[in-house]
Length: 111
Length: 122
Image (cartoon, rainbow over all chains, first blue to last red; front, side):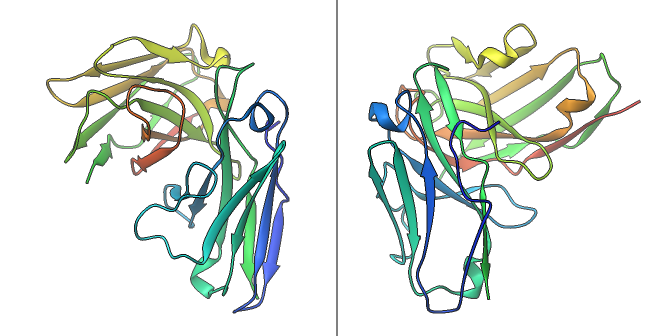
């Protein structure tokens, strides 16, 4: 249903490092379009945490980082904290659909 | 810092239309796209379409062509979204969001409005 594929869930203990993958295709990530990442806490709007593959908006801790290679991208969170528990979504642009596309989301649980 | 404030929740009958407003304040309005996205319960966001106010020409996702109208008013820094012929599957939280790249529909969305719950039910 969603053009970009993410794992439904990931988990990690406080202080650990977790990564969330985002797999696309040749018409989106593989075509060179940037990937952006959002954090969504329950009952709130998505919040941008990484833009243009690996840039952080001001105010986002440097524990958050992004990378992109080929048709995939990843979000990494180091030094995991309880407040990082949220849903995370990747987003890119698809030339075939002529619009933005999202992943189905990954629920991060901090154990 | 740009802020986007949306109109309140709404409940509609199937077959009717809904209009949601998005008021921008605190930043540049005209040159950055305002997009509309929706999120069904338990699912990821879905891009519906957008408009760059200074151009006035909207762009719609294929899925919503013919049912969706997006407008923007530079004088009031407000963007509106109207979705017609509503069905139960349109029940979702609707968000407006500002594009991150001036004059382009490419790029990220930041900030987002607070969201407007639209329930379609008889």
